[in-house]
Amino acid sequence: MSFYFLSSSSSSSSNSWNKNGLNNPDEPVPQNQAAGQPYDSLNPPRGLNPSQITTFNVGIRFHSIGDDSTNAEENIIAKHWALVFTPTFTLTPFSIQVELDNSQADGTLTFPIRVFDTQSSFPLGVYTGTWNDILSLMGSHPMYSTEYSAGWNNCQHWVAVMLVFIEAAGTFKAQRSFRVTERGRYDRVLGVLEKVEGSKLCHKVNVVFQVAQGASVHALGAMFGVNSYVTSFLERSGKGWQERTTFRDPRVFGL
Image (cartoon, rainbow, N blue to C red; front, top):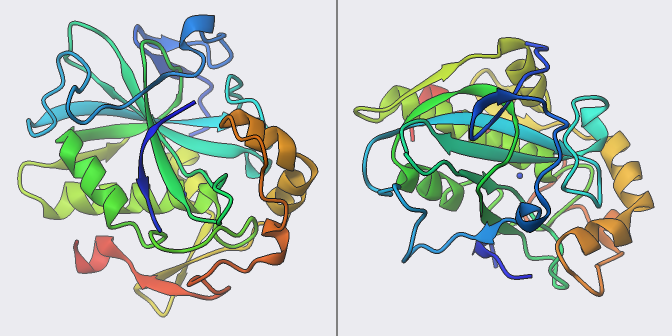
């Protein structure tokens, strides 16, 4: 399976979004859409102009490790997280899923981008801006050029930091806005980050995810079509990302 990706060289409502709006989060994804399609920057989904201001529903998926067709909100601290962006205006519905993947044999983090005709997700908020904004934020993510750590530098941290950057874009960039619609869920997701020194952030350790991923390492590799998955990640602290590495909160300092 191949993906378009960026490489580095991560309220208690039970509703979810898909192309028809609100839907059951456990609704199975059609088999021909289970893996999605690689995002092609030269041929974006029909109806999407990456440089045009667009309104996106922003949602989150919580996958059981090794099975990205699942999406349930129970025990999210032990699951793989991915963000889903669904344009609200297009006549040809689709969703774009972004996430962190650590399945490269050299430990390099990649950020796969996949397009789905239908992809349910738990709502978080609404972003008005361009798709290029999202690509730019992925490229400036603090975890870029770092190495994976199940406890300290994982997919959950990546998602939470992306949301912080989206918030900042909505505040500081002209003609952009971000509105949280599910505050309880949103705050739980951002709970994997810790505020330090007043205006800086760092990752909280997640021992539960570390153990869960260690037990399912081969299954997670299979999720991304990887034949030989790196099994030594539990021994790595994350190159360039130590346990208390901090970064400036863009919601305070701007982008």
